[in-house]
Image 1: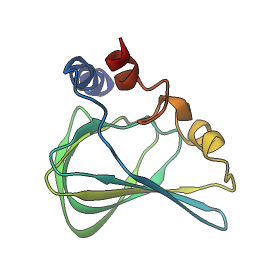
Image 2: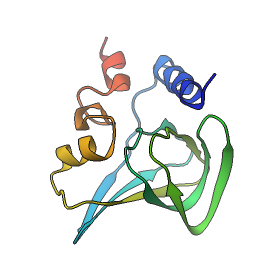
Image 3: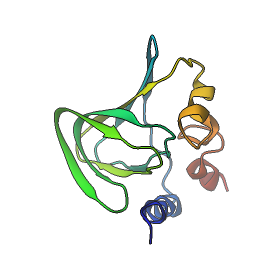
Image 4: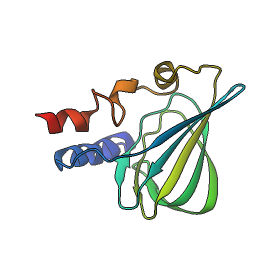
Length: 140
């Protein structure tokens, strides 16, 4: 089983659990040529991320277990900065309330266009969006 298949299997288990989509506050920050997307993942939340198209930085504040389906790591500290390669889909479980921020090189400022430029998803498919798989499954 590939790493993507493993993470997708976890994502399906989350969907099948019947639990409502968690409330994950998101903030957007812009500077010339840069976009940062910051999310608060509350302790105990398990989630999967979108597959990104580009290499970017991740800044993590808190304690979270993260896997890409092949390797797992416990990220813990006041602030950890790491590089994320394109094409990786991750899953995580927050041990403490954790701020997870991705930083991207881009001039785009339209949030819907940013999602499609930076990931293989559409804005409506992300948590809170009307086409999010977890939201759609609960509506049935």
